[in-house]
Each structure stands twice: as structure tokens, then as C-alpha cells.
Length: 136
Ligand code: HEM
Image (tube, rainbow, N blue to C red; front, side):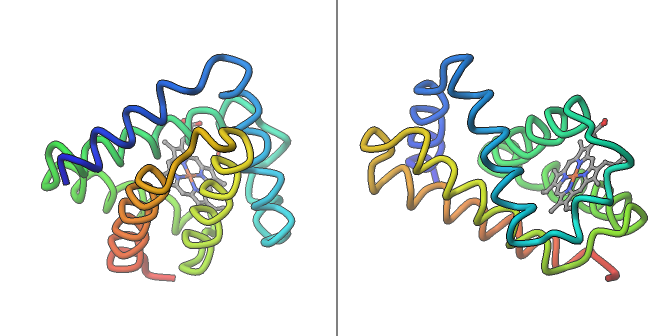
């Protein structure tokens, strides 16, 4: 777990402003390719809300690593909101896979095996928690 925190923090440090912007847009474009029905859940092309959501996911991972009970409570509440936006169970996994693929593309060789495994472990845990709390 501690090692995951180290690996995730180290990979985030590799993201300068340009790479962060590219990561954000590549994650969403990949996600909308594999899950086209999700795009219309945002009322319009809304970069602010997408950016906030992206930061929210990073914060959720950090909470999972440092204060897991707070993480699950917050996530349960986010998932309830997301049920209302029309987000369904399968979308969480598709979004997280898109994020992992985008990290691989944007960071290239710097995104080493240990980092990849740490992200995968954390995103799998978030997906499990989301599935537990969603009603869709
Ligand atoms: C753990 C996973 C997730 C977290 C922590 C999260 C977090 C957030 C946050 C914080 C916002 C609010 C942004 C704002 O204030 O404008 C948001 C908005 C939104 N999220 Fe997520 N999100 C997650 C997964 C997903 C997934 C998988 C989808 C799939 C489509 C999704 C769809 C949306 C939509 C459509 C909105 C915008 C709602 C609106 O503005 O009307 N989210 N998310």
C-alpha cells in the first residue's frame, strides 16, 4: 500500500502542465470511443467539469491510500450523484481502463511496471467500491 502511494506520487510528478492537459483529453477521447453513450451525460462539451472530475479521481486514490474510511464514504456519495447523472456500473471500469491506457501513452517508458501495477491496483479498488455503492 505504501509502495502504491510512492509509485502513484512519482508518476504524478512526471506530469508537467502539457502532459496533464494531454492526459486529460486522451483519457476522455479514449473513454468516449469505447463508451459513446457516456458523452451525452455531460450537458455540453464541458472541460471544467471534466477537469474537476479528473482531479476528484486523483484525490479519491490519494484518500484510498491514506484514509480509506473517508475515501469510501466520499465515494459512496459521489456514486449516488453519478447514478443520477445516468452513469451505469460498467462505465467505471471503462473509464479507469481509458485512464490507464492514456497514462501509458503520455508517460511512455517513464511509466514503469511498478507504477502501472500500483495504478491498476488502486483503480480496481475504486471500481469495486463504485460497484458496491451504485444502484444502476
Ligand atoms: C471514482 C470515479 C469518479 C469520481 C471520483 C468522479 C468525480 C466527479 C466529480 C467531482 C464531478 C463534479 C465536477 C464538477 O463539479 O463540475 C463529476 C462530474 C461528472 N461525472 Fe464523474 N467521477 C467518477 C467517475 C465517473 C464516470 C465513470 C463517469 C461516466 C460517464 C462520470 C460522469 C460524470 C458526469 C457526466 C459528470 C458531470 C455531471 C454534470 O455536470 O451534470 N464520472 N465526477
